[in-house]
Amino acid sequence: MTIQTVNYNRKTFVSVENTDNGEITRETVFNYRQQDRMVWADYSGGGILLGHLVGTVDDSGKLDMRYHHLNENGELMTGVCISTPEILDDGRIRIYERWQWTCKDQSIGHSIIEEVRI
Image (tube, rainbow, N blue to C red; front, side):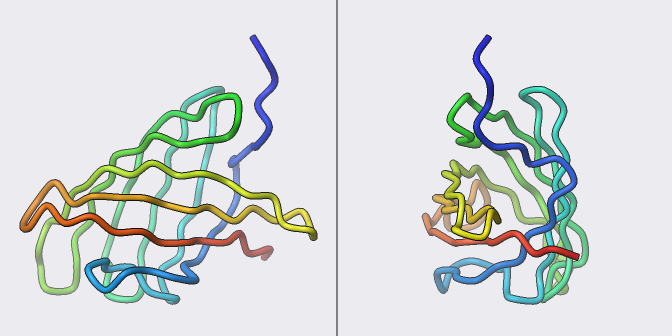
């Protein structure tokens, strides 16, 4: 087994960019956890009452995830996401996300989230 290049365990992320068909905003906070190749997170804020994601990470740090959340309109939203990390000069992680809703209009979008240090 090779060593993974990115560790998401106990990292906190916020949104810095999202397409218009997305629901996360700069107020949405993601709390990631990782155990071996399994990654999961809880998220909320900015119109999201409660959300979860679960997925796997490969040796390059790329994530293959599924997500669901309940928005402030009471709608249950679901989707899939492939995310590619970048390590910033200060050591924080930036994640480029390509996602698609599996509910409603099935539209595709992209977003960027960045690690924040608390």
